[in-house]
Image 1 (cartoon, rainbow, N blue to C red):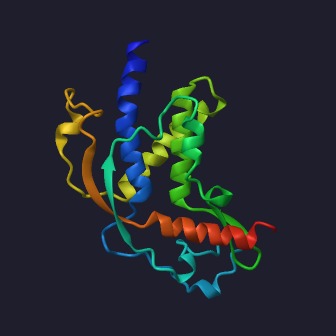
Image 2 (image 1 turned 180 degrees about the vertical axis):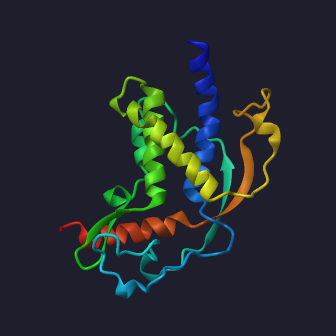
Length: 195
């Protein structure tokens, strides 16, 4: 195996843990974005739609997520694709809003889509999706900068002597509850899937 491939396989688990944290951690600053108009006054035509989805007024809440190593979600192997797809909400995270049921994606599900592309190309570099890798890496980088997670973590995970098979637990992160987002996405899909 080439030196570059060895480096990629070593860095992939660290990158995946960080990217998963992004998927489950939104902005923890306590400042919630607000729409310039109320939901009711948007036409959802052209650029007239709110900047953020309000999840039909549901409170998202918070959960504690311990970041830890797992045998699940491998980069390669027979089960990798199925396991990475196992937590995808119905409709692949797309939703329909407004009187004309316009299609939208959430940044969260867009990030997840990019993460899956990165995983697939690391597993099989000849995939046609390889052309999306630069875009996905840049998009994930921008989302890290957009929503910095200030949870303190031990620097030991960056040590060359750190053994991820025996030292399995990392910091506990307090995150917005992604399960409620998935529930709201599922409810939206159930209402609009026939249209």
